[in-house]
Length: 79
Image (cartoon, rainbow, N blue to C red; front, side, top):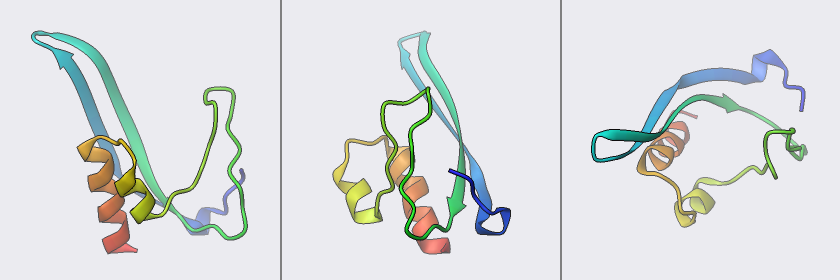
């Protein structure tokens, strides 16, 4: 998927740390962008099984982390 830079804006990084007592099990830093697209289907790269676009209502129905929902709701308010 090639995106015109004029339709891309950086929102913010989101850090997710999943730990078990004192030992970090997983640590993710997601760079969140807002992208305007029309009539485009995303295609997964070699690092993912699938890629999809979701509406905010669909995100609310998914099993996502609180920070993922927070960023989706923030995007909806700002754009």
